[in-house]
Length: 103
Image (tube, rainbow, N blue to C red; front, side, top):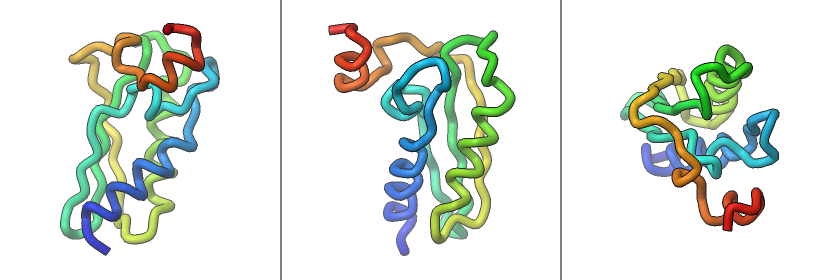
């Protein structure tokens, strides 16, 4: 399996992770900034949270790592939380904005 195929599968499974306070998956919310897959199958995910005070700040990154590890070909997964650029509703997909009534 190529690194691009692994990346696509990781993105698909990450779309099953939801912010418990918002009924939209974290990918559609725009919380995932980047997914990198190395040749050895190591996955590095850069993401943010809606707020530094998010009650899920400890558990959500761990859930994302565990979900990524479930993909065939992934040998390790590491999530890095960043605050720059900060998350804004503009980062949401059109579908997420529609679902939440932002359009």
